[in-house]
Each structure stands twice: as structure tokens, then as C-alpha cells.
Image 1 (spheres, rainbow, N blue to C red):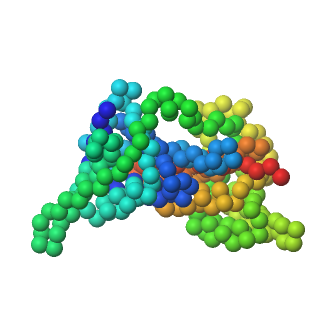
Image 2: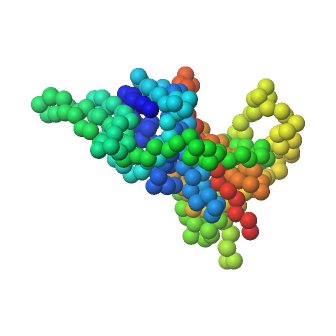
Image 3: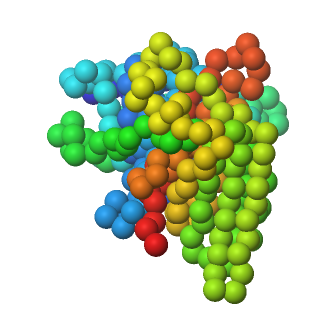
Length: 291
């Protein structure tokens, strides 16, 4: 089993780690030749948030090599506190190399960071992160959720502005009702015995589906009155955890409402320039809370 690479864009790596760190102290990293996956599963039995993300390796690495006996896939469990510390040390450095190795017989994700001293000499800093290597059998039990097609899919307003509103709403209720329709309208509502607060957005974009890739007859969003709202009642703390994904400076965020199941949110990283490819996507699964 081998993994080594030169990290040429540590800021993307750092931003994704910062976003998922708000959900859990521990993260699973899945290294494959084309992509790096971040996987976070929180309190599965208690209805916690899950994140399944994939970032194109070419957006962060060069000379990227992953080799293993299991189809060149490597699975690591890592403490995000240590990963964030190492990645912050990489920002502004001259050169960063990352590899999977062993220290005192224990598996380690090692960063070698080159900086320049005041006298112009190269100074090397090594950050070693203890990790747990998972076997393919262990990963077989960890599956991305399967959910029905959404009733509504809509581009969200800027996450920072939404976060400001929802942080205030949490003083009223433990739950927030997220509603939207296929006419560009999106609402957030909280209520208690004494008060009800609702925030309304309009003129948002409902992304078009690629009809060459999907069966239009099986898409609820294409077979409903555009003005009809779909609703999802979710834990407001879980929603706030998702809103921390503003760290990745997303180019777009698509909210999918699957009534009776979940809120699924796609956070697209990179691609702010029309000529620039997307770096990847973070997919958040937020389960609904029944009344």
C-alpha cells in the first residue's frame, strides 16, 4: 500500500477539512487515483448528518500516486484537529509533500513542508498525523445513503446570509422547516407557542435536469405545479452544521427536498470562473424530524 503526492493547492484541502470539521472530530479519507473523498457520518442511529464528498485530485495534487491491493483504493480514519493543524502549516509554503508512511511501526500521514528562513535558507518542517487504516471489509459496511428523487431542487441563497438568519432562529425553536418550489421560491420557518418567524426568498434558480441522463416520468420535480411547495422539517443544529460549508467558498449550492426522507444539499467547490472546472462536490444528507 502506497500513497504519495505533492500538494500544490493546500487551501482547497484545508477549506474542505474546515467545513466537515464542524460535524465531527473524526473523518474518513478515501484516496483513489482520480479523487479524494471525505466521508463524515455522525450519530447514524440518532439521525445525524452525513457528508459524502469528492474532490478532484488534480485540483490539489501533482505526481499523485495511490497503490493498493484493493483496486488502488486506500481508506484512512483521521482526527481532523491534527489534519487542520498540518494543512494550516502548508499555507504560504514553498513546497508540500504528503505520503503514507510508518513512524515507530504505526501508520502515519506525513507532511513535509518547505519554507524559507529570513536568511534565505530552506527550512523543512515535518507534520506527522497518526491514522487508522481501514480494510475493504470495514468500508463495506459504510454506504452512501440511497434516497428517492426530490420533489424540489433549487439553488440556495448565499450561505453566510442564511447562516446569520438561522443562528437567530435557533433561539426560537430546535427545528426549522425548509420549504421551496420549482418557481424559484425558498423559505425558512421556525415556530413556538408564542411566535412564528419566516424568511422568504424569491427569484432563485431551479437548475434544469439533463433529460438525457434521467427518466423525466420518474422526476417528481418535473411533474408538479411549479408553485407548490415541498417541505422538510429538520434539526436546526444539523442545518447550522451544513451552513459551515461556506468555508469552501462554494460556486453553487443546490438544495433538494425529499419529503418524508431528507434534505440533500450539494455544495459545489471551485468553478467560480466560467472557464474553470469544478474542483468537486460535498453532499450533505440531513434527515427530517417528524413532528
